[in-house]
Image 1 (tube, one colour):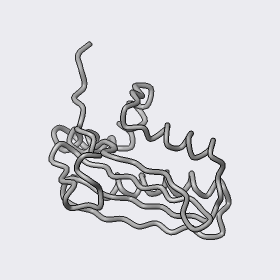
Image 2: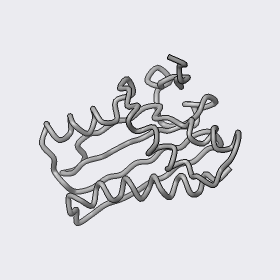
Image 3: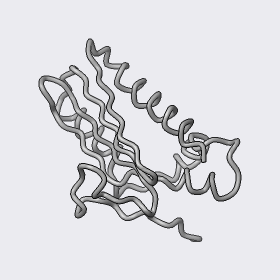
Amino acid sequence: MKTKEFVLHLLGEVANYVLESRPSRMVISLHQEDDGLHLCVVDDCERSDEELAAMTAALDKNSERPELAEYYGAMGGTDLVGEARLNLISWQIMHAEVTRSNGGTKIDLWLGGERFDPKKFSIPADKVRKPSVPSDE
């Protein structure tokens, strides 16, 4: 499975978003396991309550965003076929937090698939989203 390309693309997207605010400091931390990862990005940009709320809403585990299906499919890589590609693009945000941190902003993203084990990460099990299965509706 080509998780390296997925992770690099994800890192690039998140870094690009954070760099739009022109921080003088940005720290990225990545913790990977077989069926999941924790990405933490900290910057020194103070954001308004409205900006933090918008960021949180964009990452909301309960929001349905079918218009992004093609984007995330491309993010999974068009050179993957069969089960490997399906497993990779089935990774979802299991939990996300956007908080203030030392005069800046901290974004925590936990992504994973159906075998995601929250015990391997710093996330309470009761906060973990269960992977959704696409419906035929």
